[in-house]
Length: 146
Image (cartoon, rainbow, N blue to C red):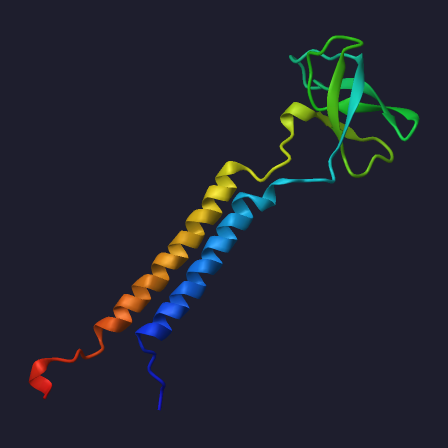
């Protein structure tokens, strides 16, 4: 025999599901933003490149752990000896490419956070719909049943 949940049991289940949904939304919205593994340093443009051709990568000089290294900059059109803020990749051994710090996001994109929030809300709405659908099949007490 199956145990029927009363209104208090369903309310507690919906409360737990609701709080889990809100916690997931808060985690994606607020807490999922920082990315500490990005190292931001200054780089000096050594060889500028024009933006019209296929090889539109400036060459920059970057100081990494006391050593001066050259790298490709994922960009073009800078002036020679211009200082730009760049983000280093995790692996700086061998040939590597750096990106400008302005073009690099250190947080989860807004559309991803909105998608996660809407997914949580749709799960809550589905749970509420299932609750209402299950309540529809239950008989209600009436005065005629006496």
